[in-house]
Image (cartoon, rainbow, N blue to C red; front, side):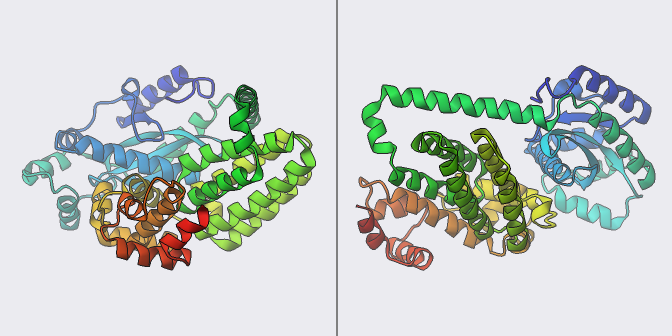
Length: 422
């Protein structure tokens, strides 16, 4: 749900209802996952949408469209026109707090041009699950055709109105985050006091550097949830180890920022843009006076890198690529191929391959292999697992092929790497 402290949901609902009555357009409020809230479905869905959603995976297709559109609108921070995965034109108004996405408003169910044979041909390709295509064509004939300039004007009006509702600014959000960080650090300190024995083995720089390596691995893979979670733990341990000494914290934060920037480039970010942002980061922390400020700037830098924002390059399709990466990260242990990933996103394997080459400068299979090797490196730290078990756990069917790939990426054979750890 969108935080009621940041958005007046009741007032927003009134605006959406009046907008829908005036335009006759379907309007829905969705979260970052593309899930709409029933309370805000302010107009009846058109017969076309009802028909598509009644088919197998129809609702999932709709939700995936909303999620992708929300991500793109948030990235551009302006109304975003989009063709949904069923073939209709929709537009999205982002709801964000100075770049932090909270969700979006979806407006849909229209055509911007009179359907022609090319439109129907593409419609058939986009909806292979529809067995009665003549019925779908009839429902297309019931849709309104709205001139593009009128559609753009409606989007702009709703965008300006909605974003005036934001009650809190980024400073408030930073204070909340800082407070939460302080609470986590205090809890960690209390836990350490109760577990002195465990603390002796986990509070040295060896343990800190091991956590740092795991964190950088998630940056390279673009695994946002794990990277952010590991960053919190890393910063907490840094504070504990340095006993809050600000000079040491500043030095370590600067080192970490440099390592993060390199990992981001290895993960597909543009080197020139990353170096500019690293320089800006170093200038900011020179003015910091409190530990929380160092940590806050570090969190922002990591978030920007992980989101592959516009400042890191004009990447128009990063939403789809991020979905593909998430699917791979969740399923790397299975025997997945390009076709499996593309099917999850409702796009063709060739289109997905083009996006990966454009966005990450690698193939889909290259990325799957990279994920598997990175995960293997992590599993190698568990002495109870043999090399053969690690190979199988990360999705390799052949141990010899695993050894070949591992050696290519890491520089040494798996067994040699394992022996170096213990």
